[in-house]
Length: 152
Length: 208
Image (cartoon, rainbow over all chains, first blue to last red; front, side, top):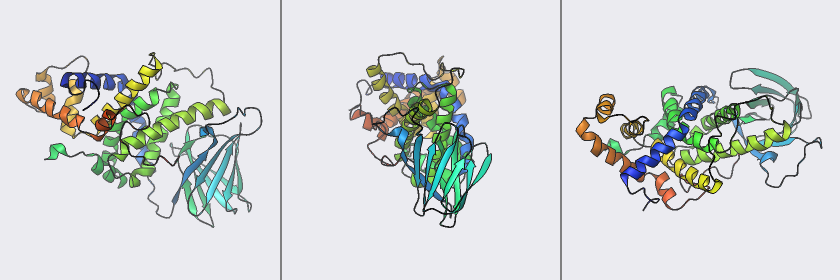
């Protein structure tokens, strides 16, 4: 009924032992990195999650675009608005849709924040590419959203 | 009886309600599965940590929509793979890897033939996903039984409070329970690369 050998207790335990031992030190480090994540739970019910719905880096058919000046494009979508960003070599440019003024807060897991503003056109610039996971909290007249965590 | 109830659903619900202890236990239970998923991609140690942290942060975002215990391992496998691939493509594309960023040692431990790797990874994912959802007493016992170097039944009895004479039967029940987990049963249906931890396509259509 199961994979070859897994009907046998000894064999099942042996395979389990290998699976556990293969990952042991790495799993410990990975667990350490997870503990603090719960503090990022969103308890503000009016703050909507904008899910990552497009990422050019995951496109199957992608030409090598290095050197063409085009960066990785990501789109976050939520019911009231979407946020599109393009990651360039030394900065990130973004667009809030529908266009409108807004304040964007770049959050990182260590709690650091950086604020930038979007003008009437909804266009904004992050003057550098953040390292590690980030999310963007966007406060606009259309609505308040926070993007999924992502590494740029 | 309690021994047959997977604790995952209640851990997810408690973590979604902000209980740090429940979250910590979820993370501990699923860290080995996530480690197996990520290590395949041979990232540097700092990249592995970034990927893992992103997956946990995403899991926090999704706690409210993952109340089905079976959805958790699927979600972790899918998200872990996707974030690793994202790293491999995006990072190398926009910012070439820094040659000074050493640390390829940690994650890149496999040096086997790729087909065998894929098969073994799928089996390991199923075993670790199954282990993660066992009741605490059974999971703790199995973890002690696979320690290296091995522990004697007397030591295991000391640590678990299970009498020496009951360890054998408890072990047999725990393994039987493991065999019946959805993850192992799904794996038994064949090495299906997209979902050894269950046939559900939960969240598969979304990137976030």
